Image 1 (cartoon, rainbow, N blue to C red):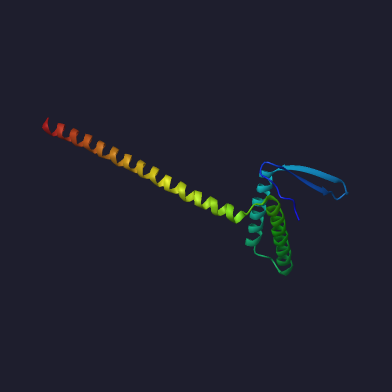
Image 2 (image 1 turned 180 degrees about the horizontal axis):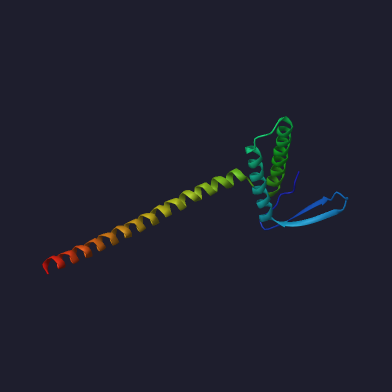
Length: 132
């Protein structure tokens, strides 16, 4: 089982290269979250591909399974749930949209006021011309 990560903590990945050399990489918690999101995007891209034959289909399925496996490992270690994260973003977007609606409404009202002012100025000029 993977060790739980804490926000702000450095994560250490240890692995061996093809030449059997041991490597250690330190990555911050935010980097792990970035990897999770990137793997999800990669997996979704693979799922959208149309396979060219049975062999290609099997390769795609294998890559999708690997991506899902790595996502689960990283999410478990980081105690991060992508679905909760995306729902939270959607809720924030709705609040932002309401603010943008109010901003848009105020801009439209200002435009309407300017049009009325401009049309009154035009009417005054027309009256002056007609009286002269």
